[in-house]
Image (tube, rainbow, N blue to C red; front, side, top):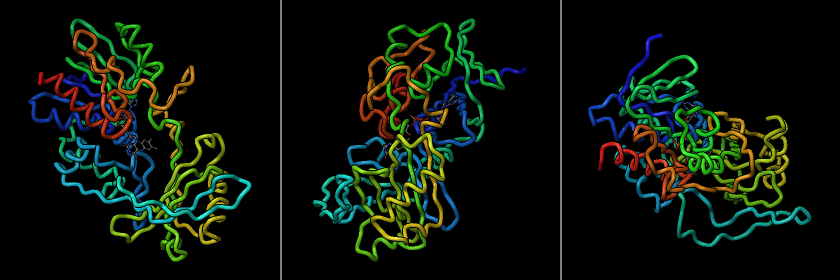
Length: 354
Ligand SMILES: Cc1cc2nc3c(=O)[nH]c(=O)nc-3n(C[C@H](O)[C@H](O)[C@H](O)COP(=O)(O)OP(=O)(O)OC[C@H]3O[C@@H](n4cnc5c(N)ncnc54)[C@H](O)[C@@H]3O)c2cc1C
């Protein structure tokens, strides 16, 4: 088998990997992204269907504090718009009393969405890269140092480079890729207890012909302690021409079938909105803990964000030939898209010596 050579290999084609390749593109180095899935974006995953509102299965919101992400969006000519909350929400505090309509205070710190869907960011970054920067369907199994070079093995191909950057969530890196010589015990111990942000979540989205909830003077914003949907929002598109409700489903429902999950959702929404809730055009869901290129079961329970941003991830390893990037490694907003962009910027600085 012919070994494919590159100066720099980036493992993972999510926001971190693509931003890093985008930053490195003018450095005159040969860069190659190896992505396990048949698509780019990782935890950014917008489903598009003709005529329907884009349905966000992964990352959705950003805030004004996410300055690195905002600057990147501006650079790529992508716009944002405010998440509709409305001035009233349906609130269900306990199962023994009916849902209530509650007034929401003025929102001084709104969340924003990317016009056209979050995957527009992934597409815009991809457009900046030559197609030979990216190989899909390449599941990295091992990394090893050999005679001063770094070797990468996927299920189907061998690669060689001077520098390797992993952009996998640290726990996934630790649990799915063999590395030799081994990384320090201190790294392995921390990575083994590092939470992958949103890895246990379930996103659900329903598209509708019209925003029927607005005709009932409802905003589409739902907060429920009863569930199975704890929160949901109006997810119509920026132009307000295609309509949707999108939210989270309690992660405990990962083991039942899609049909069973949908029925639970229908029962809850029918309670709030009546029979029209059942007249949806499309239902989409992503059960992230079943996504093997995002989630792997922890040996011991870890808390949300545990060890995210730990300084151990910001060190180079294997004589400066192996770097660990990714949203969870960032020292600001770790776990979030902002963290992904900042980690790419940080590792870029380490590699080019800024
Ligand atoms: C449901 C959900 C909701 C979220 N909501 C928000 C939000 O509203 N706002 C926000 O800021 N953030 C949110 N996030 C977090 C956000 O998605 C992440 O911070 C960001 O996308 C992480 O990017 P990344 O490139 O660091 O990691 P990832 O996107 O996880 O990318 C890692 C890549 O590595 C690939 N890979 C894995 N294993 C291998 C292997 N063995 N070989 C090769 N490739 C491999 C994966 O397929 C993936 O493409 C959410 C995430 C989820 C899941």
